[in-house]
Length: 468
Ligand code: BGP
Image (cartoon, rainbow, N blue to C red; front, side, top):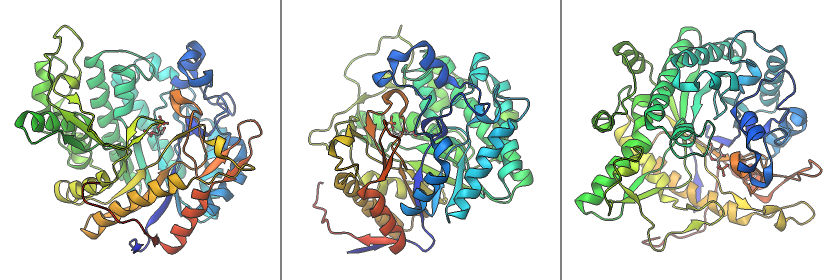
C-alpha cells in the first residue's frame, strides 16, 4: 500500500545545541548547566563523557549542511544556545554567536532546508541557574529578552519558531527525579518552574507577535496515558497521570488555560506555584500557532496498591503506579515501550480536544546501544530503525486520513549525538559519527528518508493484526 502524505509535508529531523554544537568553551559561549554539572560530577555521565565536544557541528557546519540535503531534509530543527548568544544569560549579545547562527540559517536555506528554530532545549545558562533558573521570574524576563533578540536578528529568514523543547523534562529532571542539574527534589520548586516556563513561553509569543509574521509554537513530549483496565480506579489513575504528564503543558499552550482539577491537587499538597491574575491573562492571550509533538513511548498506569508515605515529597505518582503491560514491545536499550498506535491516538486527541490545531511530529526515534558494532566499513544498515519509522508513519498517516492537521514528521536525530547523561551510549542518527575520527557516514535510514521525502511517501508492506 502506498502511503502518501499531504502536499508540502515537512520531512527532516531535530537536534539541539548542547548535544551537537560542541565548541562549548569556544566562540565566546558562556557555561550552561550541562558544562557546569559535568565539571563537578563527571561520573553522572556515561563513560564520563561530557558535552564539551558533542558532534562538533560548530566546526563541521559546511559539510553537515550538505548531509542535511542528502538525507531527506526539506526542514530541520536545531536549537539556539542561550548561553552562546548571551554568555551570562543577559547583557551584550555575543557577535560570534550571531555569525554562527547566521551561517547556520543561511546555509540551511541554501540547501533547500526550511529552518524551524527552537529557543530552549534543556540548556539554562549557568549564570541564570545561579539566581534560581526558572524558579525566578527575573530569569523569565531575561529569557524573553533573549527570544526577542533572536526574532530581531533571524526572523527575516526564520518563519517557524519554537519557544521550548519538552519543558516538562527539566522540571522532572532538575526538581523531582534527579536526572538534570540542579538535582533538587523539591515539588514546590518543580511546579513553580513548570508554571514559569509556561509564562516564559507565552511572554515570548507575545513579543513575537509584536514584530514578526511567521508562526511560533512549543514542542511537547506527549505520552498518552493508558489505563491497565476499565476499572474506575485505573481510569482515575490514567486521568491524573494525563493531567500531570500531558495536559499541564498542552492546555495552557494551546487553549490558554490550565486543566480543571490540577489546581485542586496542587493546593492539597501545598505546591501551588506563585501566580498572578495578570500572568494568567498573558497565558490566555498568547497561545501557540502550532504544536510540535515528540513521541517516543506511551505511559501505562494503574491504581496504586499502597498508600503513599505522606512524609515523602509530593510526586504525581501519589495518584498512580506505572503499569508494565504483559507482552509490551520494548526498546531494550532505552527501556521505552514501542507503541506506534500512540501516534494515531495523539493525532485524534489533537483533532478532537485541541481545535485540530496545526501540529507536527517534532521528534520520533530509536536509540540503539553501541550501534557502531554493526558498521561495515563505517556504513550502518539500520533496518530496525527504518521499520520503526515506517510503522509510526503508518499510524500517523491513518490519523491524517482521519482529518488530523499534521504538517510534518521529524526524526530524532540528524547525526549521532551526545545524549545528556547517556552521552554516546545510544545512537539515534540518520548519519553515524565515528568518535575517534569525526567521520560522518550516512546510514541506510538516511538514504531511506531521502527516498521518502522525494516521493512524499513510501510503499508500506506490513499488515497489522488485531491486538498488535
Ligand atoms: C528527547 C529529547 C532529546 C533526545 C531524545 C532521546 O526527550 O528532546 O534531546 O535526547 O529525547 O533521549 P536520550 O538522548 O535520553 O536517549
